[in-house]
Image 1 (cartoon, rainbow, N blue to C red):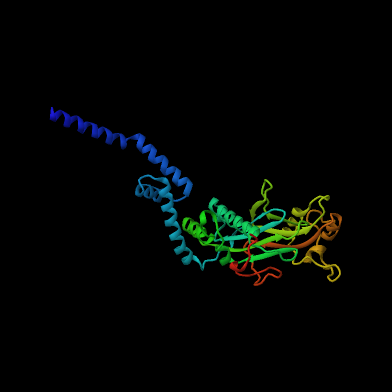
Image 2: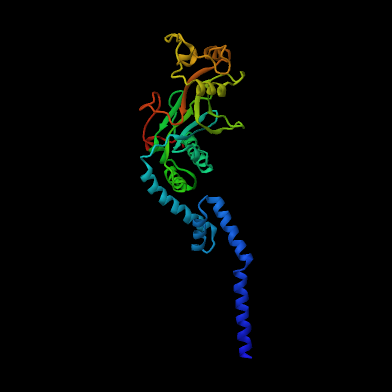
Amino acid sequence: MKLRVQFYSKMLFQLIRHFHKGPVCRAAESSLLAKLRKKTGYTIANCKKALEMHNNDSEQAEAWLNEQAQAMGWAKATKLAGRTALQGLVAVKFDKGHGALVELNCETDFVAKNDKFHKMIEDATIACYKFAHTHLTAKGPITKMELDSEQLGNLPAEGGKKLSETLALFIGSVGENAVLRRAECWKANSSDIKISAYTHPAPTVSSDYSAGKYGALLAYKQPNDVEDIGKQLCQHIVGMAPKKIGNKEIDKPAKDADDEQALIFQEYLLDPSYTVEEILEEHKVQIIDYVRFSCGEVIEANMPGVEKQPLDTVQTLQ
C-alpha cells in the first residue's frame, strides 16, 4: 500500500511538473516576453533575463530594465558626449497665453525618426510648457526665458524624474549621443496678447503640439473680430527666416527682395504679391516678438531680449 501511494505521488508530481513546463506555461511566458519587449523596446535577451530574475513579474522586470538602461545611459552619455549631434527635431506646444519651443539633437536622422526619440522630445516640450505656466513672473508684454542644456535637464519629467534622467534612459536604449540643446518658454502677461507656434514639416492634423526640423513662436496682438493669422505668420517666419521685425521709420527695404532680413519688408510667403507689412495692416496685427529654431543651426551666444537666469531664481506664480 505504501509503495502504491509513493508511486501515485511520484506520478502526480511529474504530471504537475509537466503541466508547468508544458505548452500553456510556455505560451504565457512567451506572451509576457513579447509584451515586455514591445513596451520597453529592449532586446529579447535582456527582457528574458529580466523576467527570469524577477519570477516573471513584468512590472519588476521593467523597473530593472529601466534602471540598467539608465545606468548604461549615464556611462554612454559621458562616453559619447564629444560626438557631433546635429540631427534631431524641434517641437512646440502652446495655448493662447503660453508657448514652449524645444530642440533635441541626436547623431543620425535614423534615430530622429525613432518613436522613443519622438516621446523624448514630447516629454521635454511638455515640461517646458508646464514651466511657462507655473514659473514665469509677469514682466512686460510677454515674459521669455531661454533654457540651455543644463537647465533643460533639471526640469521635472514624468514619474518624478528629471529630464536628464529620462535622456540617460533614452541614450542607454539607442546607444547614440543625444542632447537637450535649448528651449524657449513664453508667457503672455495680458489677455490682448496672443501666442502662436508652428513647426515644419507641418503635421497632418492641427494640434497644440507638433515637431519638425524648423519651428517658431510668435507673440502678437490682433482683434478677436478679425481672422486670426498667427499660424500663417509663423509659417512665414519659419520659411523666410527674418532676422528682426523691422521698423519702417528707421529701416529701409533691401534693394533685392531675396536679401531682405526685416520681417515687415519681406514678401509674404503665402502671397508674394503682398509684403508682410501690408498683411499686418490688413488684418490689424501688431507683432510683439518672435523666435525661430532651425535644427542643428549655430546658436548665438546671447539671444537679445530673452531672460537668462538660473531656474531656482525664478519665482513661481503659485
